[in-house]
Image (tube, rainbow, N blue to C red; front, side, top):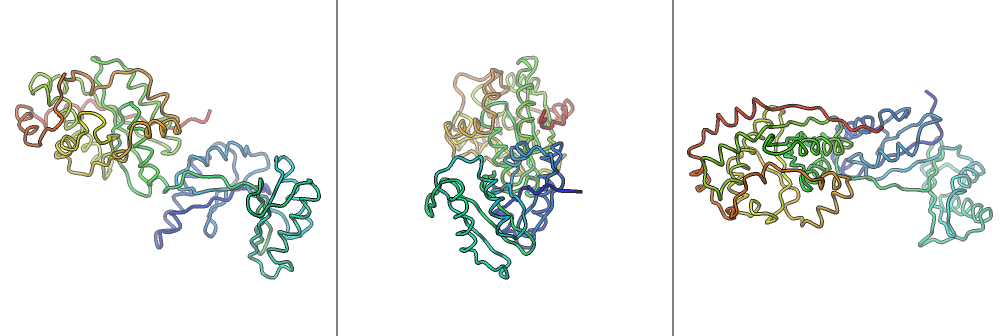
Amino acid sequence: MEHSDKFFIIHYAEVGLKGKNRIYFERKLARNIRLSLQGTGYAEVKRLHDRIAVYLKQNTDITEIERRLHHVMGIAHFELVVRTKKDVDEIKETALQLTKDKNFETLKVETKRTDKSFPLTSPEISSEVGGYLIQKTGTNADMHNPDLRLWINLSHNDAYIYTDKLQGVGGLPVGVSGKVVVMLSGGIDSPVAAWQMMKRGAKAIFLHFYSYPYTDKASLEKVIELTRILSESNYRSVLYLVPFAELQQTIVTETPAPFRVLLYRRMMTRIAQRIALLVDAEALVTGESLAQVASQTLPNLRSIEAVAEIPILRPLIGYDKVEIIAKAEELGTFEVSTLPHQDCCSLFVPKHPATHATQEELDTAEEGLDILALVEESMNGIERKIVSFSYE
């Protein structure tokens, strides 16, 4: 397959530190890049030494590929390079073409020469190409803080030239850290928590509790849309929708009012664990932030997780609301999260919820409940959806 002389070079940070597991991480990153670039008409994704190349066809939409690469977890930075012959005159002309649409008054040329047999040293190449660009563009050299940097890499076969280092998300490729079940509420926090775990290489399985007909269906529509947005980095995503209304009614009628929300959360944790077992996930994830609401005090968090048999991860535990909102805006989830909806945990909320409930108090409050039957009833009503990001 014929490739364009332009292609992307992908660099990673943490992946390169994985020792004997590095090949596995590289392969996963390359696979995720292919998933992300589906439909763009790229030519090939290929693992090279210490980096990954995305080769392009002659008429590939470069802007769209660049946009998508910004969302691939595990990429530290990347650049669009132009390949040319190892001939100084050709390098000069290629460099001039690369800079013709740039707005700059000062520049610096940096050269890295792998092929030591090339007749000019790296500083000599930089000086000669830089002098040529200054002569042709009327700009000046600045070795410390230039408006434009131009990089030249000389390998044993070709020269590679580029002007922009584009920042990636960083982190680890989605999937290398196993699976987690994310309890997605439809609010601001839980999508951000999901994204944080995905950035650490976890594959997210989404779970949403809803209380229709006591609440409207807006939360379902929101959660499906939030899952779709997150799927740009999580790829094909599974969303489980759990009916929770009847279970909530049972808690309301048979347990003390101050403990209701905490008992909701404990039942959600039990059900989420069943889903985790079903999908072979190793942890649960919530958007809880310490002391943000009554159920998120340290005693309450401890009393809720007492029923958990697998870890509950809370990546936002030390974040304040301003930080979470800023991240949600950056991810594109904030606008959807703030659409009006009725959250199941806000249903039948008591006027004075417990803020320091002990495990023993909640155990006592649950004594009249047939917990296994309630969990099983909710499991029987679960709906499973496949959600993918659409680039249309």
